[in-house]
Length: 128
Image (cartoon, rainbow, N blue to C red; front, top):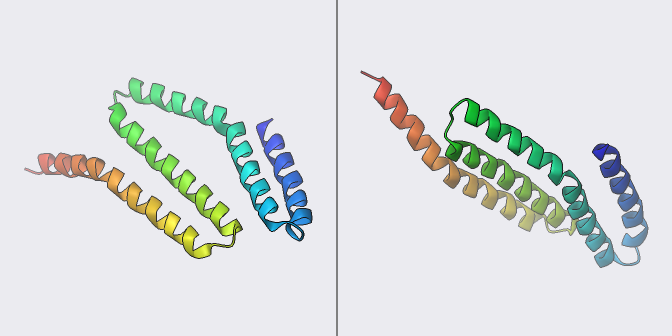
């Protein structure tokens, strides 16, 4: 099971980070970063399965893949932004982490503009 691997790696890394942080805080940060990346690599296969399933469902429902791709990009940006912000917070840079989160929100807002325009046009077409 992937969750057992993720939890095992996470707990092991957490213990090592606690032990290392007092002597070499920069090494503890690097270990945290590498552990986060390793966990992402472990779950990327499951993410690919979900994306493939969503594409199949969108195809069956005859939904334009542009909308699905936009939603997947938004979810990806949200996760990557959160990951980057948390790693930055772990490094003790809370202000920079907040800026990363704000940038992710702005990028998400920009990506939603075409979908919002299409939605508004559809609503306008339905109004007599």
